[in-house]
Image (cartoon, protein in one colour):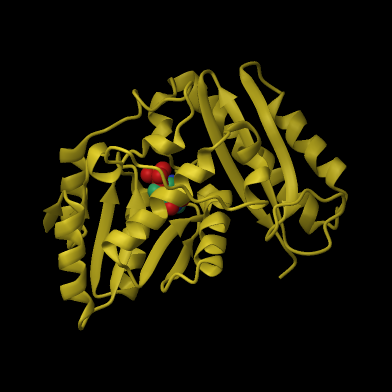
Length: 281
Ligand code: AMP
């Protein structure tokens, strides 16, 4: 396994590899869990060379967000990736990615105006910017992204399409703990009591899935269910509960086509997101 810290070296290696091999990239912010590892396994399945980037990207954090305390443990990540036979870890520092006078940002309009984009101003500009940089540096044929961050996935797909980027975005379903909690590096912030409360998110989604299956298409009814479940205990602060068109992310009143139920809330101080697709197919 090769650990590469500079853009120049990474681009050189990528050029060499691309002569006869397919590169799969899994962009991450590190502190890896089984969700990330599932993405790595997927990349392994579809490509000859697997690269994982580890970079806690400052431009996607707001001024009052958790950039400084975001969990980091490179040695642990390295061990996990070694076990998966990862070929390359791209591990740049902030100066390498954003040198002096850095001034170029990518904005994916419309899609950024919904869900997390409403409260996390500029977040998706940071995401689109760093991901397009990673694409230019690692030069992958495939890039695997989790559906756990549904809006991020849709934004990256749109960016790749709009800017004619020559790679395929490969979505991967959300990996959950045995009790249903979506895996997240931020779960480490939760106290045992908070972790218990966080399960309400999954419980509320299951409830909506069951109602949907039974024929309920009225969004206000379905959203109210989520609200009831999340409010059933103290300490879960709802940021949003939305049911939107799964492609445009525009909120809808009735489910006619493929829709996504997306939830963001705070459990204690920890912000958690989750989502599920509601579709007849
Ligand atoms: P992060 O390190 O949180 O930026 O995530 C890196 C990648 O892993 C993104 O594509 C995420 O969507 C994906 N990811 C994070 N958590 C999960 C999960 N529980 N299941 C599947 N993919 C995930």
